Amino acid sequence: MDLINEIHDALSHYVKKRISITLLLAKVTSIDEAAQTCNVEELVGEHEIFDVRLRASKATKGLLIVPEVGSQVLIGAIGQSDTEYCILSFTKVKKLSIDIDNVSYEIDNQGFLIKKGGEDLKSILNDLIQQIQLLTVTCTAPSTPSSVPINAAAFTGLKARLNTLLK
Image (cartoon, rainbow, N blue to C red; front, side):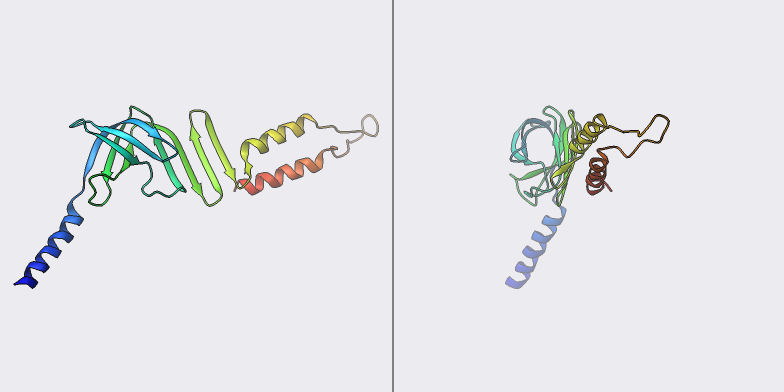
């Protein structure tokens, strides 16, 4: 009879883990971007839940979506925990960040950042504009073709930098 009770308990535990899902609609009350968490208040029941993960795991790479304070979110319990939650859906996003190896993409209300290793698109384009502003082309005589710009090597270098950053 003990074996039957053990099997029953194990099966009940297994089924409970597979069926029991806790989803809550909540409002974001504060954000801690460094810890990648936020605090929320349930819309039904008005309980505050602390340290809700912004990512599914505590990893520092991958997809990070930061909601706006005051926005509604859908949170889900992690496993059977009554204290660990993760945001599953957002109504308003403050920032989106994606990190894949040494490539980063970030967008917020200030603009966007595209970065690979030590290079970022803004720096390369600013350097390109600077080189265009410095462009000097010499002609040997009036009505003759111009020579290669004196900063042609800088343009070649900028092209190589863009090619390492963009597909």
